[in-house]
Image (cartoon, rainbow, N blue to C red; front, side, top):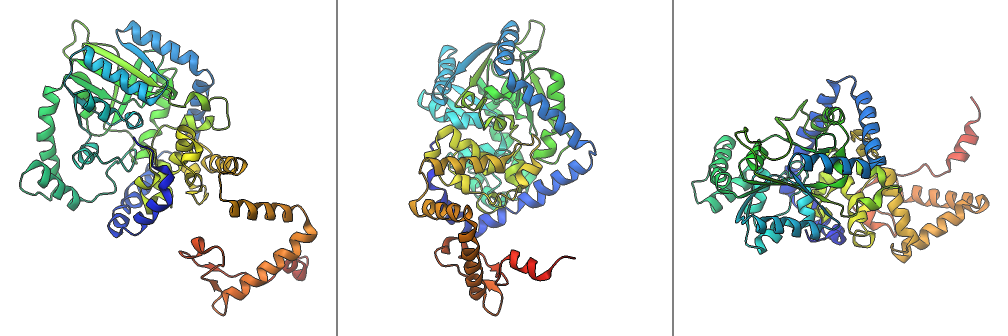
Length: 469
């Protein structure tokens, strides 16, 4: 997927002006936010489970090489082939090579964000392999000129039913339908033929289980089963950070994932896929491959951003983020949107290619509160901002103002009168209404929001006048 994260400001402006998008994004709060709240409230021990799951994920990451080697040994013992890729391009080429080795001409695919990193569909298309996305949301985006997903759980959350009805009528050449059951049936009728004809099936992987050499896939549509047991070749693609030592670890994390993602106690389908089809088994692939991508993940190990590797891709942070709720996923310009993307994208594609993303947050802390893995996203965003400042990647005027503030803050005799003067000026800007509508030299901030004017003096002075109680 082409990196466009350097255009966040321009794209965010476009999305804010799109009234239809604004209406569609309200689904985040009416469905996902309220759904998570209800699911968590129904599980009084949620915080204890979260603490235990975080400890299990940290344990896996602390000895990631050990558990990956264990996974590889167990997967191979059960007939699978494990392949490793340093870069997304290498991973895509490995999948292309698998298709060529087995003479595959058509492939079906279950949703995978890692394959978005790899640009896998385009690579296979160039190699002469027809790929069909089979998650309903991903299928809708694919037939809409290969539009990228806007959300990691609900990729088509930015569209409404009427837009999809128009798309189906145009692409399927059938009478326009507006009832959801009729529309989903139409999509199933189109996809069923693809399922039956495919030579190769591809899936992502929510987790890898080291003790059994299995991949765990969690879905709500059931299409992943069609993608993984019908074709003679199954390729599971995921990042190296997804390994868990045991099935017990998986069970602990699974209690958090659907509740955080969609507000469900459990997803409709939970599959543990292990090895190739046995001699007495009625279904399953003849050949099974794991393609495990590094893609910058190992560089986070042992560093200040290692906590980000705990992420289980539930989407809770973006569902609750006030910025994502207004601009949607496409504004972020790469695979991962929202707060998680604002940390991952700079680390994976380079901080210089995502200068605005660490600032695409209010730092309200809601993302950390709802994260099932307790990832300190606001702290990580602040660290990225510090790195930008250290590397002189921010505009010179911004750096000059921050240096001036830092100097004044270290010299109280200068800071106090300067603060008093600024407070007095802000009080005057508020006028009789007591609200500031425009701040000189900060129009980009004040153009879209008002703030209450201060009373005109410093807190220190007000406190001194009130005296002790």
